[in-house]
Image (cartoon, rainbow, N blue to C red):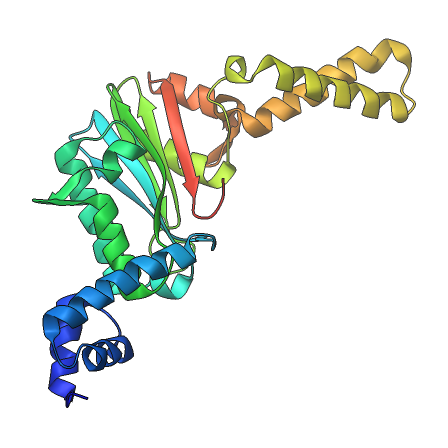
Length: 278
């Protein structure tokens, strides 16, 4: 067996990013041959990624990329533990993905995965290499992009020691100043699902109406006032899930729609991501 020194292990670790013990075992198995040891580590890394494929990556971060003020994207990068989410390597990975996104201007998640990070290397390869070093399942999660109008965002840290784990990207028809960021904060905090009442699918509205009607009848309300009570309950449903009908967090006496109207802007669309949540 070749005499493997600590210096040899350090050198191989610097070349591959693999763990100390893995480097030592690879060098010993390769009889001190660095090329052979590196090849073995790469093969092991691919196998380890396969073993991790059925594990859940429910931690990570949310990041954003802007191209001026009229174009922006938001993406989720996932890992298995918040310990890895805190590491410099994981956050460097996110920065590398963001740089690739800024250059490639991908239209969707698959386009971002295939975007180049360096000649001959892609975002997917960058993620796989980091997964070998960090020994966790890493994956690019959700992705959203808006082009046109005015795009604003807000990222939120749920823990000061962690990177942002919540975020919203919002497309407005024009710049409304500070209120654009305030609306993005509203979306992160209040969890709306739709921009306007008209955006709620008809089958969902009908389901909520049926539920409200049944609850009202079970309460024994007089038949003649049931329709009015049902409409009231339906309106409260809209106030929960529709952005423009929510009470504005910074001034609950006003709805978000009133604030938007006062500032002469409208929301075209938004994406809200919380790490680990669908």
